[in-house]
Length: 298
Image (cartoon, rainbow, N blue to C red; front, side):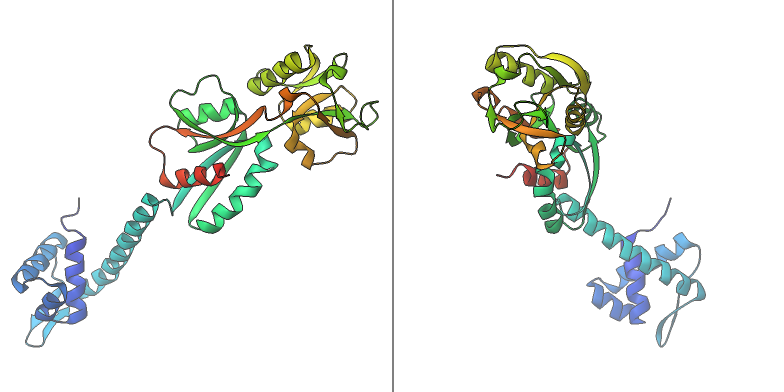
């Protein structure tokens, strides 16, 4: 364990630069006897003398010259550490680990992250894609600081959740489907179709929302033949002629020649989807709080 600290190193540097205990004491606003005691304790801790005192002031010994290089580095690094801590407390520095569900990359993240990055250049983002179920688990385990998830979730205990983006459900049909050229259709017109559905294991809540919209808006329960985790995969399976599907409207930003996206007339499909930003309800880094505020802005 070191027997000296930053203050003693600062005293040492002041004497080395001034070449005089008297002048260094004046610069440091400290009594000269106190400065002498500080340097003596430093020398005792080092086990060697760092100054030779004479009629012309204080001159560095070889050991003192070697120590001066390292002492200046230590003081500089300590100042950098202080600045980093201050900026981290203000949310202007540090690492933020953000998890997100796949559909967040279509509109939410591209529209919000560039401005955040420009405003907070010293904050590093570490991004990881996953499912809502996985993101919630990672949040609770402390493996990520914030997550963009799909609502609703079964258990929000211990989490702080804020809505960030609303969206509609739209139908996605093979390009050759008889209804593909329509601008709008009623859900009931898809009652006899086979459906590509989101995975009951990995995307249970989005799946549940779609099933509820079909029951309430179309009066039927979809006949599911294939499942997928990512929306883009669902669209690809529809394009392969394996069925029809309901997906978030934001997916329509990415066109596919094999499919057509068709709006629904049913009011149950409008605004039924919510992307939200979640954090733990305690011990959230300030930089993560700032990122969340940027993501939920209207």
